Image (cartoon, rainbow, N blue to C red; front, side, top):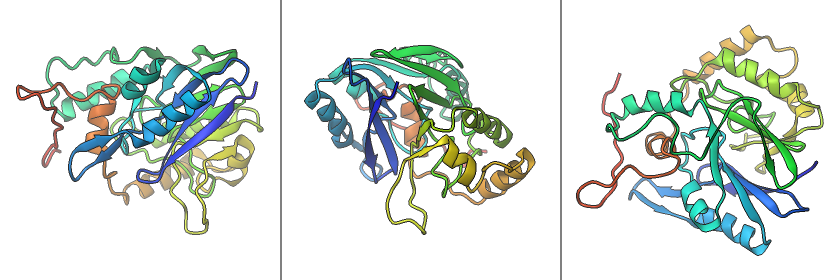
Length: 287
């Protein structure tokens, strides 16, 4: 089946969120939502999430799922806010527990922070099936960018998170804790094994110099033929060498520290302190 896909682009973080809809039943899923965050003031706002909520309300949709492709390092998720407004279950890959274990140590999170993934309603394993209305969906574990990255195959549409970008931009970095270029290569091959006509939806677009407009939809066939990093014929060894050298030249994302602390908690803020305020940590000179 072919779901209707509505994209919402947040230029501040170059993130694309999606509403994926069964047009027969009017059930839907939200994929990779954004909570607006001002790093200068530490304030959050909900304009991006409200645009999604408004669309869902205006079209009479019922939210079955609020899906995260991974623990994002470049934006905060609005999953709890949207769940409170619209319902639905928050889902992520089962290897979120690996990410939580890593970053609990990085941020020295207190003993009340559990690393069992219990902050989420559903932890998907590779091959798990679920439905959006009457549309069959499958969770595919596609690690490499992070250990917990998932691709959600919903009908003929696959939501690949940061695993792939548009063909003229390439592939995701692999230098975050738990990332691995050889693993990413294998994950991409599993996506390339899908039917050529499968629609692929990106989580980001960064507008390469040769292009004038943002884009976020392509196909398996297009990626296999034209992806500048991993088109058909590129060996694992070639890819790992390219990715390792490229990653060494990249700066960390501007919002990585606030994003990971919130997103590893399924979008909830750290517990308020005795003054009623939640705080984020910035590790200094950490090795």
